[in-house]
Amino acid sequence: MIARRKLGRDLEVGALGLGCMTMTTIYGPADDAESIRTIRRAAELGANRADARVLVVGDSLTTDIKGAVAAGFDSLWVARGIYAAELGIAPGDEPDPDKIAEVCERHGHWPTAAIAAFRW
Image 1 (cartoon, rainbow, N blue to C red):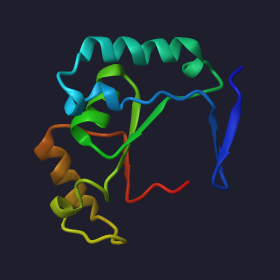
Image 2 (tube, helix red, strand yellow; image 1 turned 135 degrees about the horizontal axis):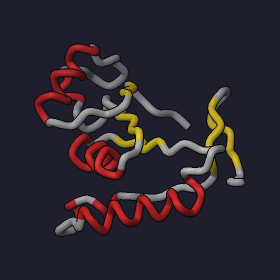
Image 3 (cartoon, rainbow, N blue to C red; image 1 turned 90 degrees about the horizontal axis):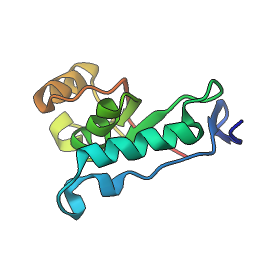
């Protein structure tokens, strides 16, 4: 069984984590097949057991969310960061659900869910 950690008041998550920034093109050419193999291996190590569910959290539709979907994981898009201008919002504003849908459609990537901000 995976060790558990509490986030905030109500959310409990598995302690196993995987950083995926190097799976993007920010550091050079990305290898999608290798990235998917790495994410699946993390799941094999415990992230896909009955006591856990993998939720990829990210602020980029074209890297974080795209990668999560490609690997078959749920994704949570933190919409207020990188795409704030595209969503027409200022820091602290809540994005309009219709605008979120427009941005997702424009980029061709759909998260499982979206939130305005993520706080530890």
